[in-house]
Image 1 (cartoon, rainbow, N blue to C red):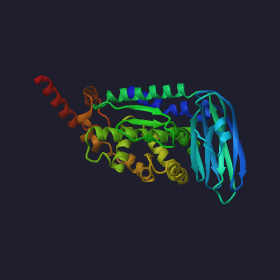
Image 2 (cartoon, rainbow, N blue to C red):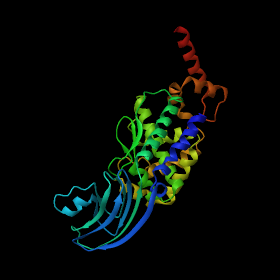
Image 3 (cartoon, rainbow, N blue to C red):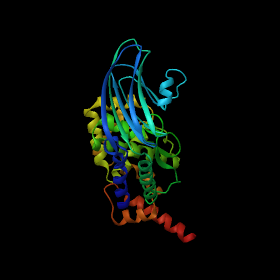
Image 4 (tube, helix red, strand yellow):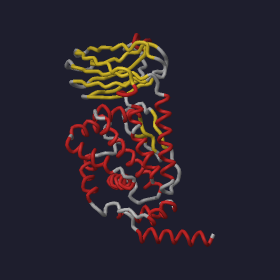
Length: 335
């Protein structure tokens, strides 16, 4: 599993590829007071086609944020078609890909408000999203290829895209990671390493969910089972340190996890408060991974089974591995 281990390390590093703090020019921060019934615009000059603007807005209360081109801004509030519209309670992070070169406006709308709002806006503008997405998709495709060398499962789509809203994954039979989730992790956690750790647990949660469904597990839709299985997989590929670190971080900083839940509206956000609290106990249990081997061994590639037979790990169920190898040997002989 050494190749998979190296691929995993590369996979979690792509938050750096997509992170506005690394890939972007800026940041530019603007503070503004917006009176009740009023709006205020921030001009974003001469943005190139396919640029990505990554925006973080903090507000003292409910307000609406919109991104639009110059022609739509001139028509506001009549018949305008914004590229992005988002409702902000306290904080919101999002990204928008610019469709054509030109000036754009970030409009902060308090027209429906009854009180003035104090707003802080941070904007990063990356030159292009195309290379970022291609790099990230290549890494994730490689991740799935390496996973096939460990387990037997039906192929599924594994990629990353801009989803147009702040969510972690697009629901479906495969795994589609949203770039907006990467931005939100970075803005909420504000620590690149911890953001990578959170991303690791999220991806393994989705991998676990898909594998359980692929293998027709009766509890494949159970959130708690997927949480546990994700950590099992992480231990098996030497990533338990990431799981333990982000668990400890969220337990010590519950407001950060609550902010993530709020920004993602409780949807498609795998790392729940309960999971964060369960992880330390799971990692301390010496039989935690071992008890899952009855499910995993029949789905392991023969090459891996032979390696585990020759070099057992702490979690290897050796009699089960030997039995499965014998079953496959007899089956191969009959063929």
